[in-house]
Amino acid sequence: MNPLDGEEPREYPDHIPLQFQPTWRKDFPTDVPEDEHVARREFVKFLVLTSGAFVAGQCWIAIASHRRTSGPLPRLRVATVEELETKRVVEFRYPDEYEPCLAICLEPGRFVAYGQKCSHLSCAVVPHLDQGELHCPCHNGHFELTEGRPIAGPPRRPLALVKLDIQDGVVFAIGFEPRTI
Ligand code: FES
Image 1 (cartoon, rainbow, N blue to C red):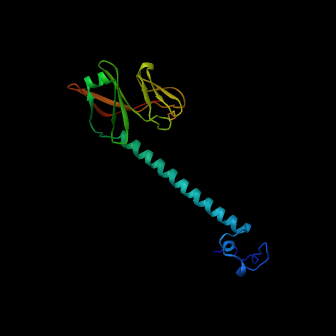
Image 2: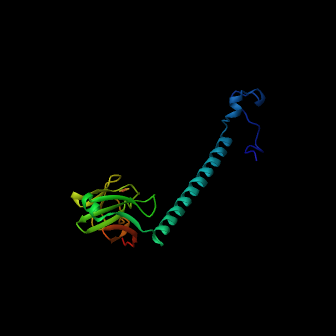
Image 3: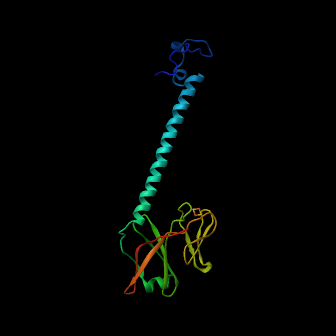
């Protein structure tokens, strides 16, 4: 329906009838009722799109988290014990290629592994072994190294903790440990 239906014929600033107006004036109406109608329609479109994107994002997070916590998860070879003790940190992806993780050697024979996504807004955390922590450069978040719990900055939840298994000198990722805040 034309938003101007039922209204008085439009009066242009120069008082010249519509048929003699230049094309640009017909294409870009300047009268307030029509402008408000377009703005409202655009605003509703914006609301619908952003709400849809928000709902889709929440669904994606729910599905990803369900996939992570519900089994069975793959058994993935991360590194040999020797390699991990030498390098101290080995990057890997688990349970799929979209989830970067870090295996860390705390001391010979003692290993932990975390999801690398910061629990605040998913930036990649960086291990600082000499300081005994993992650091998130995005908003200066800090996690302690032995359990991946937040100790400073905006993060409130611990890092995802990967369950490890060692067999015949090889370290495997086999799932995720349930975490409490
Ligand atoms: S994303 Fe890590 S502190 Fe914000």
